[in-house]
Length: 126
Image 1 (spheres, helix red, strand yellow):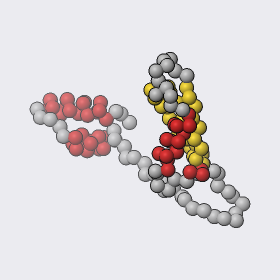
Image 2 (cartoon, rainbow, N blue to C red; image 1 turned 90 degrees about the vertical axis):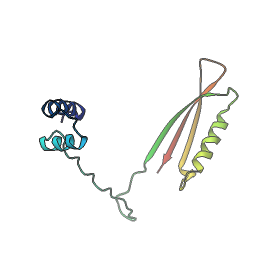
Image 3 (cartoon, rainbow, N blue to C red; image 1 turned 135 degrees about the vertical axis):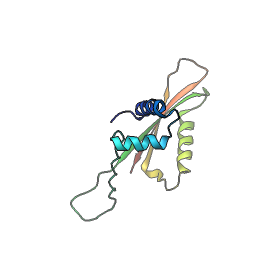
């Protein structure tokens, strides 16, 4: 598959020389589909979601981790302040089960003393 922008430029130059007018994007896509330069995207498979109890096959617990770096906060900001702010923000999300969420906040050492930085890791067990 070739880059469509390169293909568009080549088609534009060749058509411009032949007809002395600009080429529309729709004609470029049609021409690219005819020549096979633009292939059809694969259809995505449907995701199977369900539950079954009392079976020998058990699902795996999914864990997701979101890492956030906060920088240039006031030097008096404490780790507890950042954790409570993160917890408050997560509680505003609908259908958020706080019992499945673990917040780990670490204060980073910075170059300057006039601000502080933090690394916040939010682990979600789904």
